[in-house]
Image (cartoon, rainbow, N blue to C red; front, top):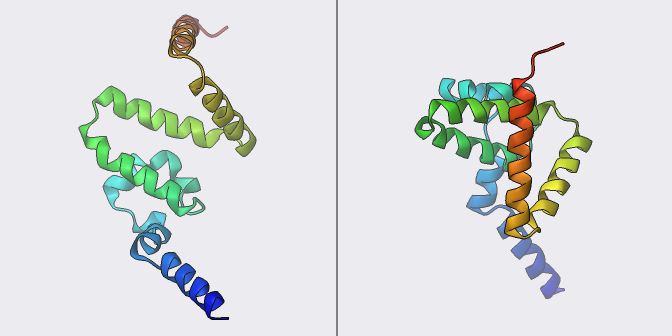
Length: 129
């Protein structure tokens, strides 16, 4: 009985510790600053339904954003837009592919990156038909 009580007390302490509370209390879209909303604009529709850990990750990107070059800033916002336009199934698929590629030897990863750059360059060079 005492062990059960101690286990429950420990769980409650961990659950309501300052880091856990801070993660749970991520701001809603309306509570973001103007600068945060500008940077996170591609995520506006999804923001309030995001789990706290994802909000925390995106807010970390907002902090680094001013130090990015203009092209890095554009790329970051484009990637936000593209990521949140995917369905949950598509995101899961991309995550699995990423994990699989990360397990490859470095030379294989470099080869895949090279092929992807070549593909993007060829694709971007095409004119719409």
